[in-house]
Image (cartoon, rainbow, N blue to C red; front, side, top):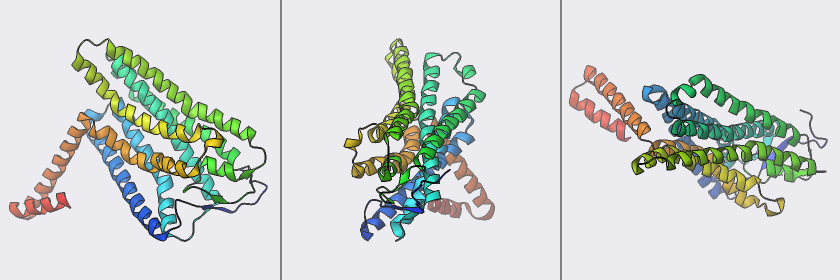
Length: 334
């Protein structure tokens, strides 16, 4: 990638605040959220892989979504934690490029993956008799791979265009990570062509998948309305509720930031919204798909019972039964 004419060796991440006490508070908050993100997504992936009843296309996509969320959060959060407790707020030019590319690629991939999950729900509800045959493992793997390919291909275009601009105003990014709008703010020269490219990529990566999801749910709603029993309608809708919540939160956040006119941009409010979909949302996703899902709850109970039985069995080989139970109780509640 050809560097811009104005030599920029690094950028300064302004972050949320310069108050040391507030930075320490933010460090604790982000560390807690990131820890929950890693644990929740890892646990969901392990449950899906270990329980044969969850080896369906729906849970295949949910597992890939959890894997994507884990990596997506890992692109941002470690650097945020460092800047919260370090006096050095800088990020190298190459580091900024890498963060921008991987975060954008994963963000766009998630947009496509959520659209793929909407198609999966459409097939499950509208065509239940051929659902298992139609949504084969090969097709599911192909759709996931296509989501990643589309996301990273489009992101490579915007990354190259962004970091070949001239950064002549300043090197202080008014955000906690290398994001599109703060970087465009630092650039000088003609930006109209870049704005056209940005809106084209917004349309192809966000608007088009959102329209596809909307169309899928129109067909789903039409199918649900043809179901005679109220219980059947509720059961059909319950299989889509988690996905609808996830789509609303994710697409709503992205569209709020990137679809507004430049005159309405507010970097302070955008920081809060971007924090939600980059840091908080990856933590919420596994909760959305597990707490509202009966199959996942059953798989979780079976996994816990299996682990408890293994631990008790090992204890009985070495200690008395009463000592084992007390030790196991300590492990459970720690």
